Image (cartoon, rainbow, N blue to C red; front, side, top):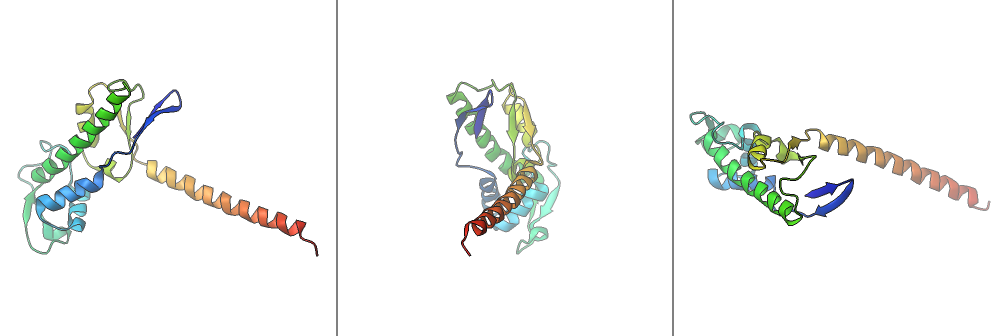
Amino acid sequence: LAVYEEGEILHSTILPIGSEHITNDIAIGLRTTIDVAERVKIEYGDCIPTVAAKKEKVDLVTFGGQASELVTRHYVASIIGARVSEILEKIEGELAKVDRSRRLAAGILFTGGGAKVNGLVDLAKEQSKKNPVFYIQYAFARLNSIFVKLKIETEKLKFEVESLKLLKEKE
């Protein structure tokens, strides 16, 4: 979590909780493997149980489960929603520590894989009444392109440094 104000970092911390915990919760709640839970989260996950269909069922075999077991999307959403609410409460607590709770003019930005869970932005808006909430869908792709470019420039720089060393060597 990083809080910026006027272009400078006002506060930063690492929250010891994230989307991996959501996956673990699903695995425990559905009594299945982490791999199956991750696939369920990605393909059928939602943060808001009231949005998820109460009658729509998912068979865990479809996701690699060992036995046929039907679970409702509503149940999966209740698991996800509980953990996401906890994460949002921790964010709110950190904002309160620096007197920025409900006072972020630029809002809250979500990035990373966990930010893709359906309903995250809606739940965050509901819980963060006065802070605008945004989801940066392509942040990872953008950062990756920067790192790729940086690597290319670094390799080019290494080449230029090696070339300069050759000029200095006595023959």
